[in-house]
Amino acid sequence: MPQSGIMQVERVKYIIWAADVDRALQFYTKVLGAEITSQNHAISELTLCGAIIGVHGGGEGNMTWTGMSFQVPDVVTGAAEVVAGGGVLSREPQDEDGEPPHLAMCMDPEGNQFMLTRKRG
Image (cartoon, rainbow, N blue to C red):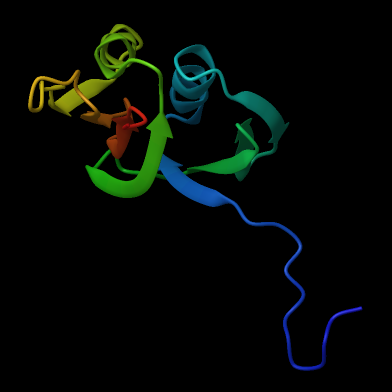
């Protein structure tokens, strides 16, 4: 039972905007392996590693920083998969102090920016 004065939160999801919802859904399912869990006329939801991403129509395709980061085993391979899937790199993976790259800045086809990272150490 919730404590008095504390809001009962049922779900947490991250919302991104898309001018072309179908194109966004295809990118996140085909490139990142997300699963579509619900769709309606206003919003579609994806699940990826237990996180919920809502894709809302009405986006204008403008570049938008999302704050989302996806950890992958190999940033160079992941970055190539982003580009092959229709995304863009705004910062290519770069070697750092003799270690393999740990970061790539990416953008989905709708202009939503995200990071690919590799676990360090």
